[in-house]
Image 1 (tube, rainbow, N blue to C red):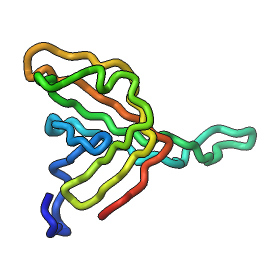
Image 2 (image 1 turned 90 degrees about the horizontal axis):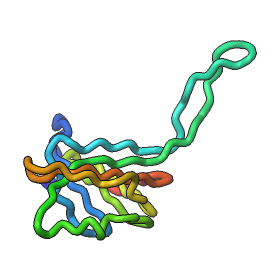
Image 3 (image 1 turned 90 degrees about the vertical axis):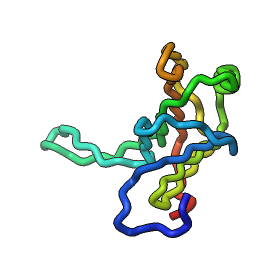
Image 4 (image 1 turned 180 degrees about the horizontal axis):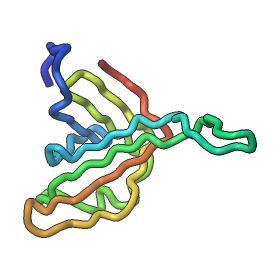
Length: 127
């Protein structure tokens, strides 16, 4: 990605690495949640109250099923280091991430399949 960041640039391209290996991401499919504490409204005895709830960091995206794809490489993946690098300069690292769910592969259209990783938190490691 470019070393010179335009302050007016919006998010366009995201690079994802898993354990240091770049993953080919289907454009427009990346969804990232930083995780940590969020405010949530709940009804209490005296009316609405604001409580804090911890949510996991989450990175979900589609990738392509190619001759080099080995589902066993992803199967039951735990303790992975997943890095989300935006072309706007932000970099988030999810340590000890786990692959969530099963990988369904759809025939045609490049064999796209979804990967979803969760971690206790993410850390902003660059911007």
